[in-house]
Amino acid sequence: MFIRLSTENDRPQIKRLLDCCFGPVGDQGAYDNLTGRYLLAFDGDTLAAMTGLQYNEDYKSFELDWTATYPTYQNFGIMRELISRICVVTDEWIYCSAWRIDGKEKANLQDILEENGFQELVRDRITLDSRYNCYKVYCPVKKNPTSNFCKCHEDLWARPERSWKKE
Image (tube, rainbow, N blue to C red; front, side):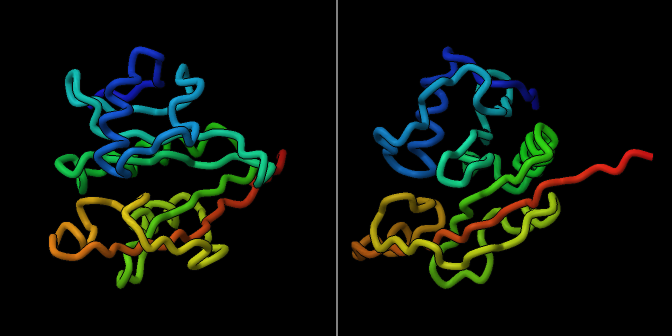
């Protein structure tokens, strides 16, 4: 696995990965300023996983954004490595909207976030009752193709500002 920062040339692979994990993201800013925005993990020439760290005006701090892993690359520790690397970039607050599938107790990223010092601030900040922003692999619609109903929950997490003591 090779890890590096994104470039404008990565746009097609980033789009395919986000479409796979989130469905069409449209104009939500995921493709703005790609150079250096995301930390990408490659298996050869194939983008396997990604996460970003971007300043968020609403939070007045940084946010982990567009965190995605192809289903075939999940459970190999790739996202754990990406998030642990990206979290050392700043000592300021970092927020993360962690998506939780309806009926699940934990968000998909919860263990990784906790390992990196994040704490849950708001459970069920947003509940979506549509196919928008639903992890297709885990979505109840995929398990039951006759259903048009899908529900996801956004839980807001944050890693508090780190303060370092000089000795």
